[in-house]
Amino acid sequence: MSAVSPFVADGLVVNAAEVVTCAGFSGAPARGREQGHVQVVRDGAIAIAGERIVAVGARARLQREFSVPPQNVIDARGGVVLPGLVDPHTHLVFAGDRVAEWEERLLGRSYLDISRAGGGIASTVRATRAASFAALLAGAQYRARLCLEHGTTTLEAKSGYCLDYDGELRLLEVASAVGQSQPLTVVSTYLGAHVMPAEFDDDRAGYLALCERTQTEAARRGLARFADVFCEAEAFTLRETERLLSHAKGVGLGIKVHAEQFSASGAARLGAELGATSIDHLECVSDDDLAFLATRQQPPIAVLLPGVTFHLGLERRAPARRLIERGLPIALATDLNPGSSPTPSMPMVIALACRYLGLTVSECVVAATINAAHAVGMGHDRGSLEPGKRADIVLCDVPDHRYLGYAFGANPVTTVIVGGTIVVDRRAPRI
Image (tube, rainbow, N blue to C red):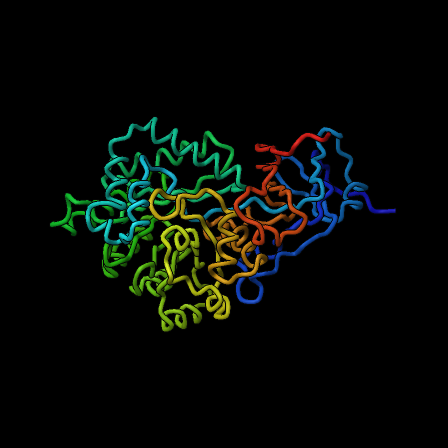
């Protein structure tokens, strides 16, 4: 006779072929050999009380220990149950699109050539500056809902498409409004240092001062949790990046870096030295900087973005296997944006990471859940299925978690639970 549980549950998820817990890494991200430790419970179940998980284990045991009304039993129908996916790098708030530029790339023009001719980020800045708050909110809500329907329950949203004081704060206000109106968590990042706006071409120092002033106001108003800088030849120098990130730390913001995307800039090393939570991209990171990162007791999380590699048709890819061999934690993200990765789908990113980065599905699942949660400063509360954590849970219509990498192009997510409440339910009715 089993012992009676000291907890009361008001919901049960049952009949899962696999409950993929990603447990054991709430204190620090998985890294090295642990990157692929997904921790699978077969024929598993999850007990929920309010917004929290109270137990994870074998279905038979949990059904004995917890008495739940039939209407509160969620049937996984032999599918895979995962932690809510976390997308730690998106540019959620913008106006317009860049479909015409994408077609130009199909005809042979490069992403950088288009940017140098006044397209790219600058074209999105023009469209976003011209859009109303209501239009920006409607677009961001629509994209956030698409993310949610693909299993994302927490995402990071960067500003960076107005590049002025009032506009950047407005983008952060829109991101906050999305988090209040949609059943998913939005973590906001100030990215005024995206590219240099045309009106400051001859006054770089003036724009850096404007960014510092905006960082201060965003921190004071609680509109951003992080600040980010795009360190690249076409954007901000290493010295400028150090200045802005140091200032952001001084006003209480966490820091992130767009690092080594098109060239080896040294931004990854700088991020580690300054205590960055994440360093994102890393397609061009040098061997010397990898060796340096490996010496850090708590290195930043390497957020990899294979959707960019796919959409831009790039040959150079982030060295994912070497990052793992060096003991560096990896996370995955969509980089959802209108220019280089217009996708809301973390399942698609997992499939791409297997093909483009040489990761196993288990490594990708950890990268898209608990490590991604750490990349937005929420690993203590999200990203794994463990007692005490928020009940953010995703049900997938696949029999084995490896299908998340094996299959692609269709959305495997049938049900999304946020804080113990079903917010997406695409399960077909039983015949």
